[in-house]
Amino acid sequence: RLNTLRTVVDRLLKDLKQLDDAVSRRLDAATARAEALGAIARQRDAFGQKMIPLVDDAVFDLTLALDDFDRSAPPDAMARTLKTLADVKFVTAQGLFGLLAEINFVGGVLNEIGQAERAEQLVPLQDRFTASAAKVRKLLALIEKTDAGAAGALKPIAEAILGYGAADKGLPALRRAELAAHGAGDKALAAASRIAEELSGEIAVDVSNAETQNLITVGSLGELIAASKQQLLALSGISVVIALLVTYCVVYRGVVRPIAGLTRAMGRLAEK
Image 1 (cartoon, helix red, strand yellow):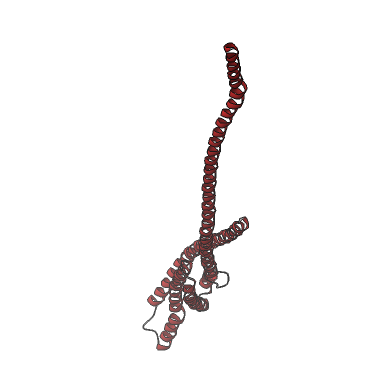
Image 2 (cartoon, rainbow, N blue to C red):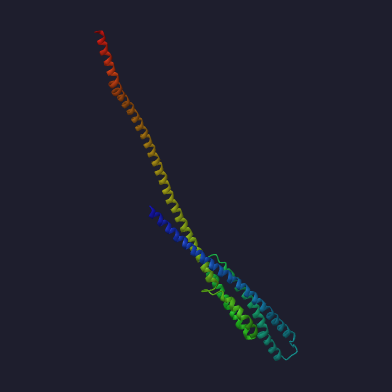
């Protein structure tokens, strides 16, 4: 019986160890995920701070070029000016606005990845991130052709943000590990609960058996006491009989009868 209880306890300790390991992994992954989300937010703020003056400059240059456009210039000169505006000034401003919007979209997708409730949700989110990351890099390449300085200032921050979306070691991997640890913890907790109930049942059986044995023991003691009382009563009766026999044998036969016989003999002598 003791071996059975020891086996159940060992199983319970094993599941509790698995639960502890799962909780530790989940906490580590959750901490890393929170740090990653915080870092992404800081990088987005830094990107915005870099982007604002660049956009202001691009818009100013485009406005200034439009103001300086000479409508009385020869057609060829007007065509060259418009081409420059379209291929450089306008492209730079458009690229910066598009990059800002795409980085904001990437940040939103990363936040969704970090808050995903099921591992199945990570696959489409990862696909959206991959597509948006490709657009970010394309826009950076486009801006680099028209404004290398702006592209050089923005590219390191943008790549740092995109790095958090890496499937193998970025935010998706952290969230996937956290969800897996959560599932393992739930499984271990359920198993430990079942074993705890089993152990409780085994102990309840032992307690019931012990109580039954106590009742049997108490009953046996009661029967023994009753038998002892009967024996004492029997011994008392025997003692009384023995006392009567002793009285008869010792007192009556040893004392009373001889005296009675002597009295009768003396009476006969007196009559003579």
